[in-house]
Amino acid sequence: MTSIRSISMVFPSKPTPSGLLQLPETDQVAQWTHAPLIYIYRAKSNNNTIPFSFEVMKNSLSRALIHFYPLAGRLHWIEGGRLELDCKAMGVQLLEAYSEAELDELGDFAPTDAVRDLVPKVDYTTPIEEWPLLLVQVTRFRCGGLCVGVAISHTMVDGRSATHFINSWAKLSRGYDLEDVDMPFLDRTVLRSSEPVKTPRFDHIEYTTKPPVLIGRTDANEERKKETSVTLLKLTREQVEVLKKRANQEVVGVTTIRPYSRYEAIAGHMWRCACKVRAVDSHNSQSTRARLGVDIRNRLKPSLPERYFGNAISATVTPICLYEDLLSRPLSYSAGKLREAIDRMDDEYIRSALDFISSQKDVSGLRSNFHIQGFSEGPFLGNPNISLGSWIGLPFYDADFGRGKPTYVGPGLLNMDGKSFIMPGPTADGSLIIALRLQTQYMDSFKKIFYEDISVSLAKL
Image 1 (spheres, rainbow, N blue to C red):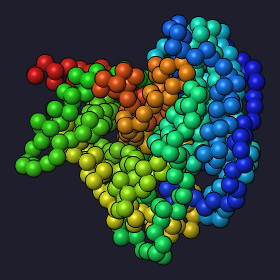
Image 2: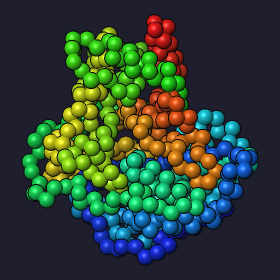
Image 3: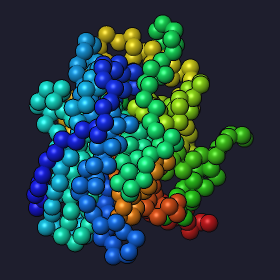
Image 4: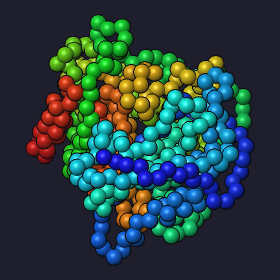
């Protein structure tokens, strides 16, 4: 049982710029809910560990908000389902909590209901103007362990910007000052050119088409209602490399192709495994597609500033595929379909997508995948489809608040069937962790097939 000891509003420790800030298209189509993250810290007895101080974390958070002051503002709705940011330093919420439990009682920290309690709750029934854009719950455990649970507005940041902020806050907590290389780039207008909005040059199927539904169905309402479970799948460096090698060895009919990445190989394997277990109750002619997000910072020309603070993720989807093709063809086929979705995202396509969003009278229908369990707004991304997020390159484990690096970082919630993230492991040895929510009826079979197929590949080496 977790008990809340105190709730505080934390404000920037110095005056910050005020006024209304218009948000670019990538912010407008992000979820208006808060992305939940947990940072787990085991108790340590070595002399290099700084004794925990809630006041130090609170004061350093106040200092961090000087530089990341948009997080202390508030959103409000404007016409067309769009949002605007009022930078008026209304503060962020910080909660101090205590749990009688041991960290080990939470198992591997898969985003179950017990783990969700470590992340602050947002009352979405209240007006959006009342929502803090950042809420943090610091929970101390009986064993001496610590969890920093973060809920941060996805309208304001993507994963890269969120980790930039948290790592900067952690640096201040350790007693260091922020340097020029730590400073966020806050001018979000650089995402748009000074030219007038143009007519989109592409169809933008990621926004204009709905994901496939099961054969014989007209919608996904029944699938939304089915029981789901969450799990963490752990991959050693050897297992990661064998999947990557397999995807690249099985390339058929292509003489020159750049090697498939770790993400493309692992995500392609996950997609195939999901199709294989779901095919028990479906036909091989079932259609499916995968949804993913692409970091556009270095895909735009010119590139966005390195420390751009905001949403620089753009959604993309694979071509629609058949179970039969994904299962009968080699791993390179599914990896190749993911590659198609990723390579589509060049400067011209991204600029066209921004123009498409700008041209919409109302952008509400372009948002999906909200961070609320069972929330029914937006398209259903689960059975027969899958959402394959990548956090592989995010520096989660640099968040040292003085107690050493975290022993685990991951999502506090996966909201629907088919939602997943591929994440770095804590040991920096090339191992990875996958957080996945799947319909309960398929989860055990998925885990069995996921590892069996890797074992078969390892045996062939």
